[in-house]
Length: 103
Image (cartoon, rainbow, N blue to C red):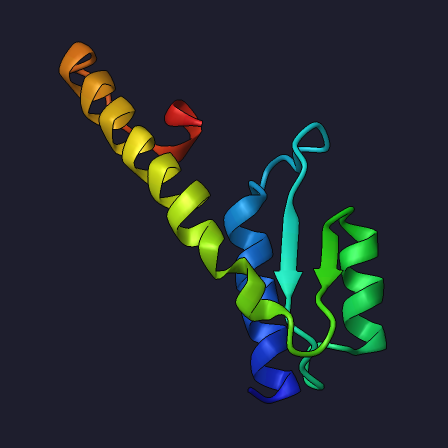
């Protein structure tokens, strides 16, 4: 990944987690990165600091330790969220289920 592509990706990530009309300071967001050369830039550090985004850069050869999280944490969370979304839709038929409503 080139640094230009990563800058575009991080800009899109920030647009997804923050609303354009209001930046939620009360919510915490954590971005976990592996130690790739294209990620480590002064501009990136200044940008994430300016929007209060927490970034963790993993040491070399340690990203594989996070793989169990996909099974132990993220899969049950996604499954529970799917059940909750289905329950919410059944009880709120006249409303649209957006991430703002479900979060």
